[in-house]
Image (cartoon, rainbow, N blue to C red; front, side, top):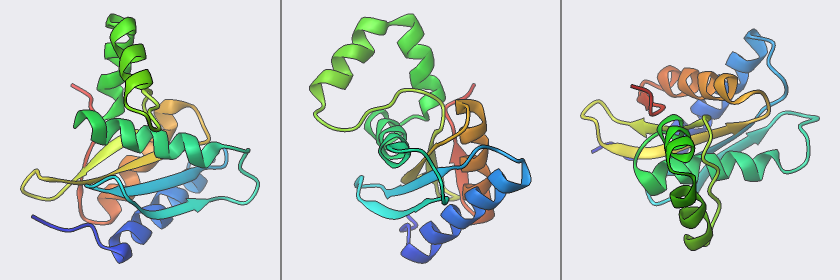
Length: 145
């Protein structure tokens, strides 16, 4: 198993923000959590709107809570809205079940953390997270089929 180091988490943040700039996305907030759910690194571009950081953490935490990327959780929310609402109310922490929460895995497929991004539309947030994770040499799992 690979530990998610601070250096690697910082690389993910920098690469995700760079990907956002290259694609001309809206300003992003990027949260990287380790496998325990502890905040490992965070970056918000100058001018991001209020609470983007909390939303980013909520996306990453949702992915860790379920062990799947938030794209799959968003599908569950459409198919089983009462279940997702119940989960969100019962876990007692940040939980944002929309795309943009991506699991970080090592080469062996072990979950070492999660990235959450908020700032643009969810699909673009997810794409920036995937780019950041790949740039750090790890495997991104957004929860898509």
